[in-house]
Length: 438
Image 1 (cartoon, rainbow, N blue to C red):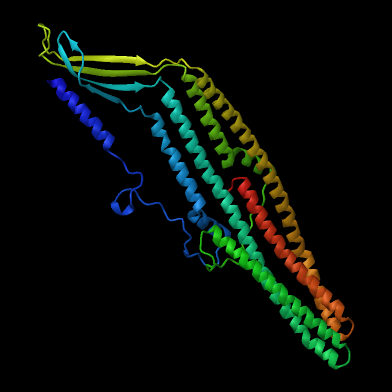
Image 2 (tube, rainbow, N blue to C red):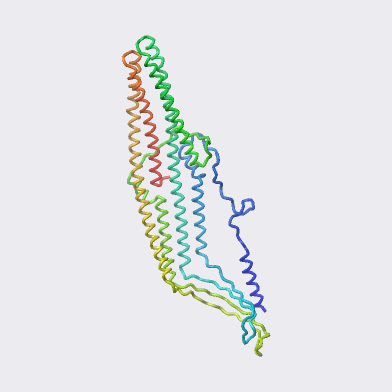
């Protein structure tokens, strides 16, 4: 009788377990799991006159690609307890017209069985899952470095257009200030009216340059808003300038990139995952054990005169027979090829990083030298030449063509300095991203 109650309870528990469902997504209002943060573009406030570092931090916080990478890491991390857990036990219940024993007719049978994998299989599977999760977390950091580099590049593009607009407007004012001198010389018969027409034409060209710079500024601002995951047309103001750190030692940066870059770390963790899979595949040659406890309910109204109705309880022990070895050999080959693949990925990542570091370092070093050259020599000389030529034109010792040429040269040098500073900022951002410097 007790066995009948036990079998009935086991049957009910099995039915209840199969009918219970755990929702995968719970609405935040129900008090369950928190809803994921929104990834739609939001016009959140950005500090006035923001620098590239500030905008990079905002981009990391709000960009949906970072959110997706974080969810992926959490998803892979959730596989670790799945791989380390024992398989669910099996409940078996049988009833109906069953065999008659000497103790009486068998009314029902029940058994609970638990499969126990060979020691080490679950450990290696969980270790492989943990390595994959670690690789995903390293990929988050690599994505953050890439996004930071992109934000810095877009910031310097916008900074360049704003500097171009400022310098061009100042140059236009300088050009317009010549008009009084030109008009006075024409009125005095010391210059031709062509000088006035030439001056008006130069002002028109400046207006064209201003329109083109405004268009480039709108494009750069749209790019920045996109990286910040803000709607198109959101207002955005940036700082007038930003400090540019020195490039540092090339050898130190190369060593840091090869040893500490998250792209290398991610590839190494993937290689570790395949090594654990290889150990797991090698363990597949050994059988798993299935242990169980079974019982049978016996009726006391059997046909045999000796029927006593005693219930039967007994244990079971079984193993699977690893007969088919080709699938297991294929698992070993798959893991081995995965190790070779990921080791090649590590070498490829390091090779690419070496190029990125060297290229950015040389570009940054050259740009810094050119910036120094323009700031300390070329622009001061061009400004002095323009002032001397303007004085000479007023005195009648210089012609208008020479005046316009010196004005153009001064503006060209100023714009070239702005471009080189932007190139220096972008090259430094690329160098820091390649060397894994936050």
